[in-house]
Every structure is written in C-alpha cells, then in structure tokens.
Image (cartoon, rainbow, N blue to C red; front, side, top):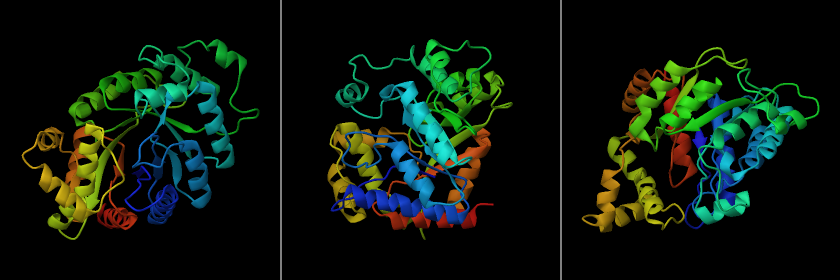
Length: 333
C-alpha cells in the first residue's frame, strides 16, 4: 500500500496523518507486506512531507508490516542525510524498513531549490553517483563501482546490524536500466506513468546484473485502485482523484474535495480545455467492484511479470481507502 496522507476539505494535517496511521494499522492486520509513504512538498493536498519522520511513527504504530518510502526524492537531500535517517530507522525496527528512492523533486522548482540549497538541482547525470553513495553508506557498495570519497570517509551508523531494503522508483526506462545496472529492486509507478510500463519492466529484467544484495531481478508495479459495491459507486467515489489529477496539471491543487463536490466540478469542466486534458491522461485507475478489480490487477501482474503489486488510492475519506484494502485482501488469491 502507498499512501500520500491526503488532506481533505475542512480538515488538518494532523487529521491526514492520523488517517494514514489508521490505514497502516489496517494494512498490517490484513496481512499486507509493505506500507509506503511518499514525499511531496508545498502541496495543500498532501501532508506527507518528511517520509523518515512518518515512517518512524508508522513502524512504531504497527507490528509486522514493512514500512518505507515511496519514495525519498534524492534530489532534495544529501546522500549522507538519507543514509543516516534510514540506517537509524532500520536499527530501531530491524528487518522492517524499505528505502525507496526517486529521481524527481516531488515539488515545484522554488521549493526544490530551498530544500537542496542550490538552484541547479540534481540532474540525471549526478543522480547515479548520489544513489551509489547512499548504497555505499548503508554498506551496500557494488563491486563494479569503487567507493567515492564520501563513502570512504563516512558511514551511516557506527555499528550496523541489518540494512534497509533499497528500491529504485521510476516511471521511465532510465530508472529501470539504472536499477538493473546496480542490482537493486525496482518499482515502476504505473499509477501515473503508464506510457513505458512494459518497456521499463522488460528492460529491468533483461539488463539486470546481480549484486551482493540481490541475486536476481525483483520488480514491483503500482496501481491506483478503488473498490466499492458497484462500478457506479466506485466511479462516484473516484471523482475526487480526478479533480486532483486535473488540479495538479493546472497549478490549482487544493484540499481533496468530497465526491459530491467533485461531481459538480467535473460537470462544470465538461467541454473545456481542462476536460480535454483530463480525457487525454492515461486511464490507469481501477475503480470498480472487488471481483473486477482482481481481474484487472491479475492482467497487470501477468503483463509486467511483477513480483509484487503496490496499490494506492486517492479518496476523500480514509474509510473508502480502508474498504478498498479490506475487499482487495478478501478477493485476492
């Protein structure tokens, strides 16, 4: 499960984080393997700004489920800071921490510059080296790459026991090929980047090079899922996510609106340029009944040969997200 700690209308960040905590506990009780949180900044609809802090809370609030980042946006942070945070999380919760790393900033350019304290950011050419630094600082140096000066001088923790699982996240073949070259786990963001899903997953498997941490390729694919009693009800409950999608792309993102309000907003947009933009977006959301959702998810897993499936759900209230988890857990075999 991936959750964004979304903020609905007439609520607070505290409410959103409490909802995410309740959802993590539900996922733990239902037997889900992982619960991930994202990193977004300066967004009125998302309270998940600091994955490491939220992961510490969620891991302490659950018993068995692995908790991690989906992901930490490496352009925003020095490699040593990321490695220290997740080495400490792993020491606090051995065997339960995942470090998913992404290449996008997860915010607007001005906020990214404030986070990184630079105006030029972290380009594609620097990202592999910084990723190698994170791996090396966690004691996962790849034999094909000599340790950098940073890795030779520092360590993420004074007496390392276990190490977090590292995943490279992506929505392109660039990330897939880099994950393959470094021999790390790969998670493809199909829920918002469906154009290269099959190509990226195939490239990862074809080009994978074993590493001391991972002998064979291990891939995950994400899907946006919302389950209800009927397809019509699911479509109604999915309205807020459609409003959020268009708001993101028009720079007018606000708190998550209710399904009834979303229906009115979408009706007003019909025939406008915004409506055309929404219609042009890849239709990857699965909003339907449990039985039909399982059919569509089975197809996605078969086509991508994914080892794991990550589900996410943008809804107005946490009850709808919890219902989706419960019905998916009951229907999935």
